[in-house]
Amino acid sequence: MTFATDIEEAAEGEPIEAIVIGEMGWEGYGDDDRHAPGLARKGEILRWAEARPLLDYEYDRGFGAPDCQAIRAWTENKVIWVTQYDGSTSVNSALRNPPPPSPDDPTSFIPMMPGG
Image (cartoon, rainbow, N blue to C red; front, side, top):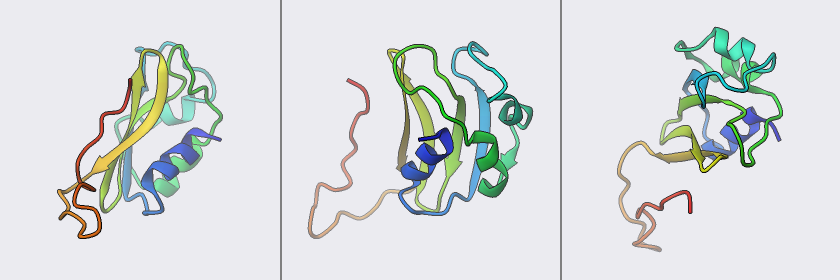
């Protein structure tokens, strides 16, 4: 699994409209040749087709320094970002706009808290 694949999974099948690449999670700690192309485009608003090749690398999601750049991405209905908790890295998302409750599950819009 690559960083780009994890971002696409967080999009849950929605096209990614735009993405901005940021710094490495610990102020440059751990950046290497895999990260250089993305860091060269840091702060630019990119289309997914431009950004995906820059972020399509294997990375360690386990405990330790984050092994990927910070990102913020947008789909029609979601905002996506990287979260790091106690050294464990994950890609998370939230709805862009408040949805109406589902008639089948009136609690479907209640937020959850990542981490633990």
